[in-house]
Length: 624
Image 1: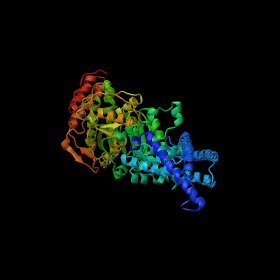
Image 2: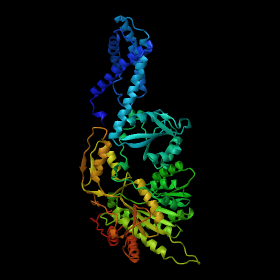
Image 3: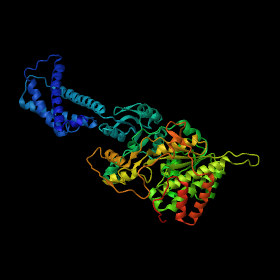
Image 4: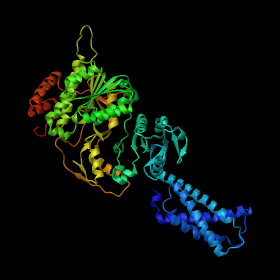
């Protein structure tokens, strides 16, 4: 900032000179008021009086700290210090004048001058602070934020943000109607109903909850209001927790996933989101995972008739179930604990709850773990998907959406190959559904199957961002497998929105993908996280190259055949009607795969992957 480039001694000198001018002006005005003359006669004592006031008052102001740190935004403390300084210095000045024996001047001037000086000192600080703020804002582009909570904590947060380079508060939000339309710390207070309008008007993406004394019920209401408006949010830390060590200082330098994208986030088509989910029964498998839980949050906001959360992890299922229930108490939420490999449980759940749409996010996605445990990885990713897809085909489910990955394209690892086989299994079930025959004079409406393929999801469990964030908090180094490793990245909300919108556009058999811009080097991502985390301090954090992991490749792709991509109703979403093995070969190989998995025969499992997946050649024959 411009102000920060001025040496501290110069800043103090500027303020002292400004106050000397103020005192000189105040003495003149005091005489003018007392004598009711615009040109008072000082009889030679003006400069003596000014000298005594400056000699006494400036040291008092210095001692009280008025010149210490108030160049920018003055707070209530400035008023208190200025008032104390005026009172103390006036007593000393009175004593000095008595000792100097100045005669012939009205004593009331000593009572009038301090009030004028007090007013002018405060006015000068206010004026100077505003001018510096304007200069600072012109130099630095400040991200606009909303503070939820116009109490003492919110005011303190607003004052703190004013002297930060990166943020600007555009409004307060408060649940207390008595505060609405008030100006607090020069910021207007609005009701919660205005959040969406303010966010759109000021292009706000984030909000800060500053209500440390609020109840858990009020806190949930705040979070609900912010999420409903599509805003990300963070909470003002409790500084007592920092002192006690419950919160580390490093936690305050949280790098937001959106800051890491080298492109604008993709805005959803609201009509597509609303049309496929509202007033329908929806089931999400893998509902406790990063993508599954975000799907649950966004789908719940779109007002389905019921939401079934299916997951094999008890804790993950409990967490998302409680969160959705608290946020949407009117919504019917059903948690189902079990594996997608349990065909009877899956089918029973679909039939019992009359499910219309299934989002299949259950999968093992961590490349090195699946590479080291290939049989279980393939069993869960392929056979689990096949189990849910076949159950959907026979229970009148209208749409089935497979959450896939860019690692399914010409994969070099078991995880990617298993997800490609899962896509083929869905397409095979889709072709069978299209060929269904009339039963008892009725032609069933076939289920529409599709897959949604996207790149790495920032901030998801097991991704590099939480790892880098942890390593930054520990002081480094950040570990990158190869300096040239390149990936496509997207945010968790983008991924979830893509999945929902794809389901609205599916006619069966497609693979949908997102235009994610240019791929990003993981090394550059690590460097950007370091830059964001250390921009307010002097820390230096290194990056260490560790070498490629088993099954990892330098870059990922989104399409098997680029020329087959087609536009959709969303300008950033494309579909690829990809080819592949014939239906007969897929069925034959899936039978062989089922046998190999049951017999725990790894070589046979890998053979099937090689037959079905274009470009896949396992790096080595690992043992399970």
